[in-house]
Length: 140
Length: 155
Image 1: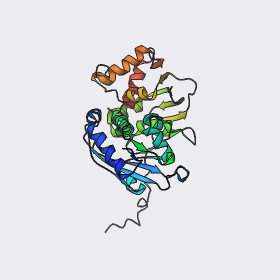
Image 2 (image 1 turned 45 degrees about the vertical axis):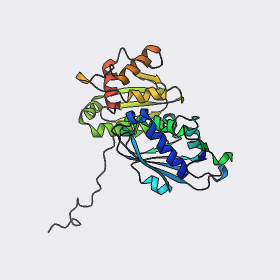
Image 3 (image 1 turned 30 degrees about the horizontal axis):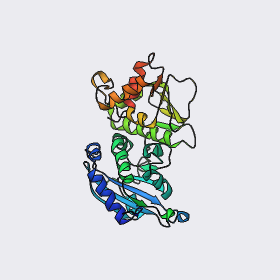
Image 4 (image 1 turned 90 degrees about the horizontal axis):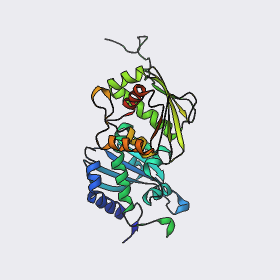
C-alpha cells in the first residue's frame, strides 16, 4: 500500500528497503555517520512545511530512519537539502542524485572526500527510495 | 600572569591558508565540489599536499551528461577553479558524472600509480577503451595525469 511521501510510514518502509538491500550492505561498509535529508516546503505542491529525514546509518545497515524537523536533519554529519519537488524527482528516478549534487540541485554539506568515497552507497540509498510505494501530495 | 589582551599578537586573527580560489564570483556547484574535494584531500594527506605543491598544469574536466565543466589551474601550491573550459589546457577529461566520481575513487598503488586492476580501476579502464572516458593530452602528459589523479583521489 502506498504511503505519504516523507511521512513516518514512508520512513519505516524506506528503512526496511535499505536493510533488505544487499547492494547497500556492501557499499555502505565502513560508513558511520548520520545523514539528514532536508525536504524544503513547497506549499503550491501541497507540501506546506519543511521536514527532515534523520538517518542513522552504520556499517551497511540503517539503524534508524525517522522523520523530524528540518533543524533535526541539519544537525547530522552530512546534510543534503533540496525542495520537495527535487526529492520527488530523485525518488522517481527522474533525477540522478550524483548529477543533482554536481549541478547544485541537491545541496550537500559535509566532508566531501567521505561522501565521494561512498558514491555507490548513496546511489543505492536513492534506489531504495524508488522501491517505496509513495503517494505524492501534489498528485492527490 | 600572562594577560592575553596586552600582547600585540594576542588578538591577531588566525587566517586559514587558502589553497583553492574560484575565478568566478559565482562558482558553479561542480566547481565548488571539485575545489572543495581537492582542498580537503590535500589538507588531510601530506603526500597529496606534496603532489599539489609540485603540480603546475591546466586541467579541464567536462561532465558530458550534465553539460558542465571546469578548468583546474594548478600553480605550485595554489589552485584556481574556473567555471567551464578555459584555453591552453594540458589535459582535458570528458566523461559522464558517474565516471568522474569513479576517477576520484581510483586507488593509488605502488610508485604512486593509479590502480587499474581492482573493480573501480577496471571500470575506469573499460570506459577508456569504450571511448566513454576521453582524456585529451593523456599520452604526452602521463606523469601530470597521475599526479592530478593522486590529488583528486579520495582513496
